[in-house]
Length: 384
Length: 159
Image 1 (cartoon, rainbow over the protein chains, first blue to last red):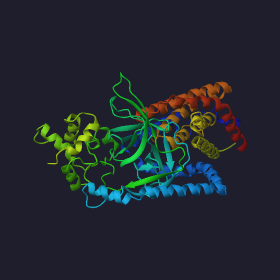
Image 2: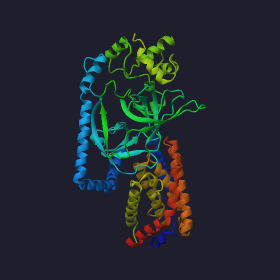
Image 3: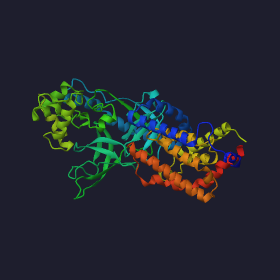
Image 4: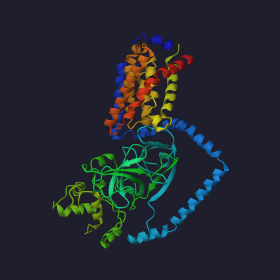
C-alpha cells in the first residue's frame, strides 16, 4: 500500500485531466449509453458484441459445476443407470400409447374445423439448450443458455421445458442468450383458464415459482387447481401451452379484484436443459399479432386486444365456414370482427384509422367489458 | 516502484477475480448476502491508487456488470463512476482513517451506489423493490477490512 502512497501528495492532474473533468466525461458517456439502449435500442449490435466478450467468463464460472455434474454422471453405479433406464423405457411406452391416437385426432380436428387436411403441429422445430449456471441478478428471474444468434435464436423467442412454459429470450449474443422467466415480476404472459376459457394475464410473482393473476374480477369463475394455458395473444407464445396451476384464490368482500396465485409448471430449479421453439408462421395456434416493438404495446395497439382470437370450437356453421375460408388469417392485419362490430354502432362514414376504430370497439363494444365474455361472443359475429 | 501500466494489469486481474465472485452461482438466500465484490475492488483501488484506478476503472467495471447483470447498459457504469469519483476526491481523508471508520464510509458508499442503481432501475422501468437488495451494503462493509487486506497483500507481494 505504501509503495503507491508516494503519489498521494501530488495533485492528480496528469494525463486525462482532473478527476472532476474525467468524471463528467464518463458520466455523460454512461447517460448517453443508457439513453441509446433504453429508448432507441440502437445498442443491440454493441450488446451482441459485449455478450460474446462475456461468454468466456461465463463459461469459466460455469465449468466447476459442469465438471462436477459430469464426474457424478460418469461415476454413477450400474444399478442407478439400470433403474433410470427402466424408468425412461416405461415413460416412453406410456407416451407412445398416449400419442398413438394423435394422428387420428389431428385429422378429426381438421375435419371439425372444416379444413381440407389436418393442420401440422404448431411447433416447427426445436433446439435443446443447456442452462449456464451463473448468477445474473439475484432478485430478477433470469437465466443464461448456451445457444445464441449463431443457432438462429432471436429476441423474444419462447423457451419451454417438458412440463410447461419457462420464459422468453431477452438479450441474444452470438453463443448465448438471456432468458427472462415467466416468474419475473417484469414478465407477463397472456393466459386462458383451461376449464372455462376465461382469459387474463399472469404476471410473475418474483419468488422463482409463482405467478399472480392481478386482473380478475372478484366474481370470476376460477378456483384452486385450474390449469392456465397460453392464450396465443401477445405475439410471443402460441396457444395452448401449459403455464401454471392456480393454487390460491382469495376473494375479499371489499376488493373489486380477486387475488389469485398460481404455481409455475416448469421445473426450472431442477432443469439443466430447456427447449427453444420455433413456431410455424400462419398457423391458427401460432402467436397472434406480430407487434414489432414494445412501444406499440405500451400505447395500446388494437392488435393486442383479446379480440383477435384463434378460431376455437366454432358454435355455428357460418362461423365455421368463416374459419375455413381463412384459417390462418384469424389474427391477421385487418381485424375483421372488431371493424365490423364498430361499423354499425358508430356510423362515421370514413373511420379515421383502422387501429383507432378497433380500439374504440374494444373499449365501448356492446359486449360486457371483461375480456372473457367478449371472447365467448366473438365467433358468433356474423361474417357478412 | 511500479509503473502505471503494471499497476493497471494488476488492477485488471483483481477486477476479474471480483467479477467471477460476483457471478458465481449461489443459492438465493446466500446471493442476497453476497457483497458487491467489484464495487469494493473499485473503491479500494480508487482510494489507494487514484492515478491508476479511479473513475475510468469504475466506468469499465460498471459496464462489465451491466453486460452480466444490468437491465440497461450504462446503469452500473454511471453508479460506479460516481462512487469512484467520490473515492478519488476524498482518497487522502479515507485512507488515513482506521479500519472501522473506513468500513462505515464504505457502507455509505455502497448505500449510495445501490441508491443510484435503484433509481435508474425505477426510471428505466425495471424496478426491483424488494428490501433485500440493500442487504449487500451491510455485508460489504463487514467484508471491507479483510478484502482491503487481501488486496493490499496482492499489491505488496507482487510488487
